[in-house]
Image 1 (tube, rainbow, N blue to C red):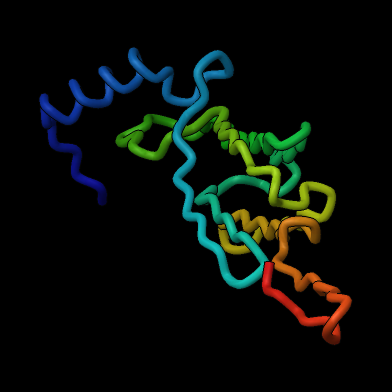
Image 2: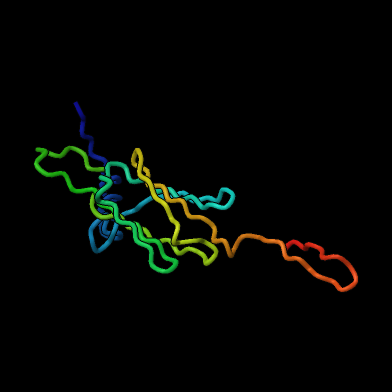
Amino acid sequence: MLMRTTDPFREFDRLTRQLLTGDGTPAHPGVMPMDAWRDGDTFHVEFDLPGVQPDSIDLDVERNVVTVKAERPALAGVGEQLAAERPRGVFSRQLVLGDNLDTERITASYDSGVLSLQIPVAEAAKPRKISVASKAAAPQAIDA
């Protein structure tokens, strides 16, 4: 059985978060933790969305801004609620991507509560070699 203890500081913290952040209401989306890293020519971004149904995830790209929205619905008809520490409601996060990333080729997957994005580096942003011609000598390659 779950024992309910009253911690006035925890309750105060929860109320403060709700008032200041909205804690998952449509007007004030909740927190969506994220990790991002680069591995070679691909940027990887992972968002923690445990308990979110894949069909509630909305991923939009407009110019160089990626917007991720998801919703974990409120519990309904579960009887007397003894604890409510998991955030519910709407979650949203926007990422502003640099011009060196190819937003046309973003791929996404959702597994075990983690939304993963793979964003490739744009071909124009990759290093390339430029050949230098000389009238006196054969062409030489210089790294760009």
